[in-house]
Length: 464
Image (cartoon, rainbow, N blue to C red; front, side, top):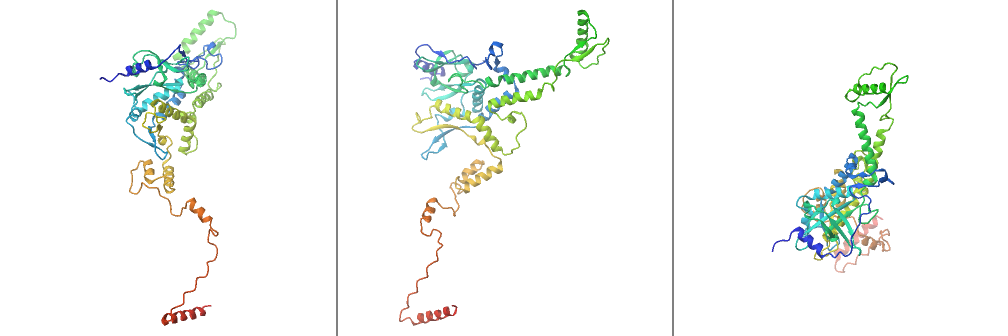
């Protein structure tokens, strides 16, 4: 029997779903791709919509999204299992490990997670379509174009998704109602509807566009030879024909490529600049404010996006932990939870009783400088928290003989032993020792021994 195609398996899931009644769209009309229609109150009446693709041309916004996506994608996503001691350890499973290493036929894991985060950061939503085999095991994951997906809600509260054709992901036709079990939906900032994420561009789009407008004006300014526009004035009234002739003469001879040439004015004509120059308009300060607003909205430290100098603190780990806690952690945790639910491994179901979970390896992100790392691992080994082989593994070194054991210094005592010592009447042995018991009397027939003891007693008396 031939293996069913991806579309057949997906269509079968649609057939098994029982969507009853009219499905309503979850779109609340706010922040939806590709337009952010109301970045500020009343903006849509003034035709101030923010296009996502236009806002992304801002270099700081582009850098922030690229930085977050690449920092998450570069870390390895591991399959973990809960062992009998209640400790999570890395493991392998033929059902789950392959899809984590190679999510689909056209992306490796780095490209896949980068696409996941770019969709989430730019549009507020990431939709991942599951590809299953005949057993129902997830064998492929496809990040969908958010503009081709619409969340739907049935009258009974069940969630479905409408998919438009996407040949790359294997959706060869429009599908009206895909059950939520076939979609991994990671969303961010669900301010208006639980199923509709909101892009951070909703908050920083105007700042990004303002910076773009400032830069566009600067381009025009420098294209004009850094000479602002101005007015020719005459000491007396002139007719319209003369004004038009002077204007045309000035633009032809002193505008465009001729900017900067020496103008000779007669008859009392005077040139006065009108445009505000960069210094008067505080151009640099305004651009800095716009850039810091963009960085703050996405939680990226501004120096990482090239805005301002790096902090003087040379503790690499401390800086990375700050970046992780305020920016990356929520995304790591969200992806791990979505994968656990999407692969069906979060609660030990369909896993033979084994509790699995996914986890990103943060060692490459929160890496310390070499001196601090060696010192920290050394203290962990000598303090009995880590085996030498475990510490060597962190440094990329192999196992050594005797390294698979926990070591502790001899002078360390357990709390139980110290408690027994303290329970004694004299825990620290400060009382004087009792006089030794007298030696037993020698036997009567042992004259030699008796004589020796007597002589020893006389010697002792001499020292008293």
